[in-house]
Image (cartoon, rainbow, N blue to C red; front, side):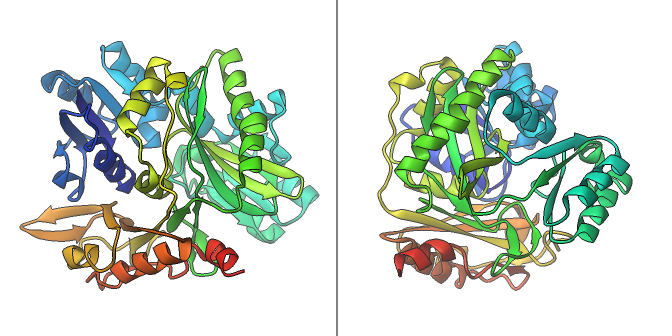
Length: 427
């Protein structure tokens, strides 16, 4: 098969890394890709929202299968567009990707089909949002309804912080049109985990669990980011809880979407809070998480491409997946100033040394570019250093050993990725 991966981040690098190992893959392309992806795929400078350009690429290179990585083209309808042109795609249609494209839609779906989630108000009126905040008190969650690159959520610890979030999103338009509507919801308390399931519209195949770290600083301090690191498996999500998530959240969602005329094919990513009353949905994403994808694929022993094709073709009931019993952990190296104002263009060196600094290390590029033989930072999140280990603690030690070998004065990372699981392992 001639395969195209759409995207340019570490998630797409990990997808390319896994797909290129498939015996089904004869030739791999990525658009637009990055400096790391170029080592495993033929990168073409076509933007993820350039539907005509991507169609022309598929036609010129006789692409057999397209894997769409990021959320923006999914929500905008890239799968619909390419399928209408005769190209098979992995990923949801625009009608199904609304699960990520509108937090309000998802909350309404949960209310209609009895899917456990926090009590909420959906509104496009700033004054009504503020009245709800004053009525409920703090802590309280303020969410931009639309896509905001993982940053449109404020878990406000005070009423004043929540009111300021409403102003920033609705009046100052901090996240553009994403803040036209808001969701105001109760704060859920517990441990947050990520749960993924492949689905072909009728069948759902659970993937391994993972846990990421959203806050920019050690100890979960500072503003939310797209993710500063992750590990898999997440010990908090026991096999019994996994079955409960499938029964109470994943399957009812897929059934509900089918009843709404929006059948979901692709990967359904549920952000969950493990509360005292059981797992509750925080939000859905309609693609692989980033940085969760990187650690999941480090543990996947089955052929990824075969599973993705089966999801598209309605044949997931023929697929079973094998996982490495070892833990995987990934540390994000971000540019100074991230998430608000990352400083790009700084040189990075030492990656070959870092990859050999510890056993079982793989480095995925998130935001890099090659200029005249030099590797430069080209985004907020720039690298994801992953490692496998017999325990989360061992994977953590190996990952940070490799991180410390990267020569990048312009970058930083959290030093406590995986701390919850390591604490559990140590008793």
